[in-house]
Length: 377
Ligand SMILES: [Fe+2]
Image (tube, rainbow, N blue to C red; front, side, top):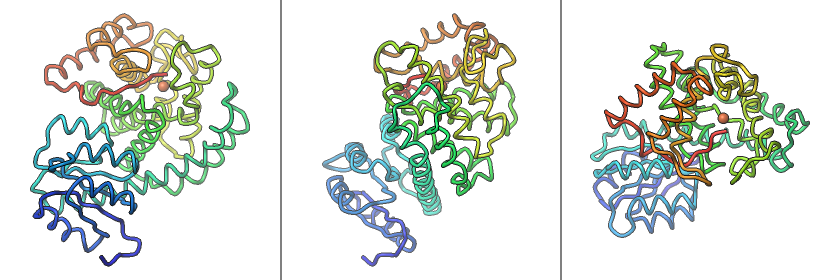
């Protein structure tokens, strides 16, 4: 195969010659295209050549698409995967989310759609790399050092200084690219902590339902979505020893964990996000009765978006698995919200959220299939 310098590498995995070859023809002008007809060959190929994107048929003889997906993820956690299948089922979608599938395309595919999705996946991969590079620079040295209860340590300041300027290379000129960027940051965080896989996406999902009920404008909804994805981003600067600790946290552990709201803001300040977004993130652990952190705000002093995220965050955490306990049922989690209305949570928002959940359950929209382990701190 003649290789195009600097063109992304794409691997097509499909047992059917028709779709495989037509996809190859469509992609050939712009990409280095490789094609194999089964999972075993795909795994061999991925071990030899770094791929940017992989299109995967789910229904293949021998090794199934899902088994192939699992194996590929152990070899290359960063390759963008697009499922192309005539047999999309809810179960395969669930599995796909678990293994970080970028998108689904039903067979027979249409050419403009597949070209657009592949282009988006390549853009996402570039952004992933950039973000990892910047975050790596910011925090690697810091993570190597023993975390300390004083967040004004020189290492922390150093992180901020490295972040300053580098973010400039990322285009955040509109709400859409800003949301896309927020997702990449959130997924990067969730990679660090497997127990939070999918957590920020679900927090965004629940928060947005509340926002719609409150007739938020498109701009307000977009700000809340971005804040929902980024609410715990500061955990990226806190050692997994604390984030994944089983058993009771000591007072010192809490001091360190509580720093994540402040760390989030310090990390995000160079991005020039709106003041609303930053305030939602900063205050998502305030309590309605004033006993929360970081600033002990109470009632309506707490920004509305932060009160919404607090409920979505806690509900998702309660209904998700943790290393040390099973998830609560939806019913028990709702009872907890009611019990804490007026104490931890805004009581009006709790009753509104319960109405939303009821409607979602009636419409089978509660994303059970997105449910995965999560810790909330
Ligand atoms: Fe948090």
